[in-house]
Image 1 (cartoon, rainbow over the protein chains, first blue to last red):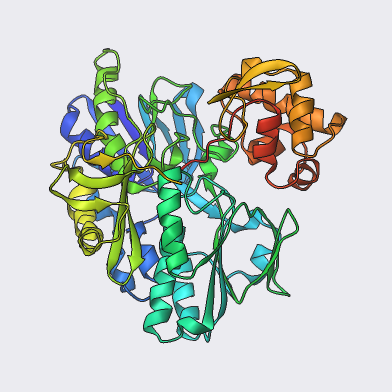
Image 2 (image 1 turned 180 degrees about the vertical axis):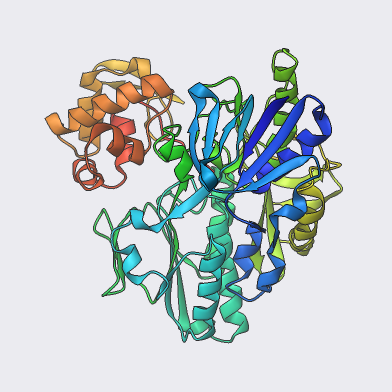
Length: 413
Length: 104
């Protein structure tokens, strides 16, 4: 009997467990899934919590519910991976698992301590919303917020869901408008990048949305420290910004177990072949989702598309065939813009987000890089799709490969 | 893409003045590019430039700010003092490594 070990039962690990159990011979393979938490969070839902657009119970379910029969689930932290010895040691009872194939799906965590002084005001008037606890704490804070300067700061890239910070300020604009206090709030978006997004077409169009909503952008702002006593964030270039509420997107790093095992890059993401999704170093190690260092978004849609490639490549490897599938960096993201509208972007390693229609040319129905109600409904329905289709590894009726059909190349000044 | 004469050599540059082929770079070019940014290169600058050149030779892309600080031992604060306003981008430009790609 051989062992296929999966570390991490988040979006990637759960999805892959569901796919593997359908494709591997149960007489030959034992599949083990390990995670330190019992609860599965629908992370796109965190954005809605501070603004009370979702109830907390809408964003979590027990992990076990999504573990298919035929997969053994172990609730434990992972102490160490020893890839040279094909061995993993769990924290619980120091249990040792010898694996034949290993899938790393340990995700990414936030590290507010990377900015000096950040923790001094943490969860007082400085919050994150990339965690359930952070989003809930911010929700409480906003209930009594009387107005002032709301500063959103991105520490450094890459981050989980690069459009989430934009959505946050767009939704904040809507939230304060609905509460009748938009005139009492200054919204300031700070980023180390040269604009709201990294690629030219979307940068221009998303920047226009910022301007229209009266959100001020401080670009190329590299935060050096937070002075929590004075409510100021300071950049390395000497810029100082006052805040009454600081919403932080802290440094995102790979899991501590990757650091402990010496398997990560500077940010403890695992060096991974961006085409095959196999570890750069070990033939029997595969990486999916946020844990990988591939130059794609850290997002559920990436995991979903990548999983289609990964399952085929794993089966190829087990059969001794050359790896036949290539992941193209395809990603699809909804960007909520408030007022019951949303924008949609669709892109890959090679092609930046463009305008046009998705998924089909002419009929769409979803317009790309343009605010629409249709897109908003698309985003809201996604929660149901996530819990009922995606996690269970059920294929979509849409191709995983990026397609240029329906997209327009526009000149951007 | 355009051709530009820097330190007497014709090199390919993009619209922002980044060299598109790291192989066309030399130290005289670095001195000229630094001058355009208002920087007089010292030993401390060269230490960073050399680190970035060798990191890029291995990885095929200009290093991020974090990998420069981790790898060269120069603190972020010092990097901002040496290469004001966006050191990762400035070092990449002076080192002839093309514009660093932000991940989306």
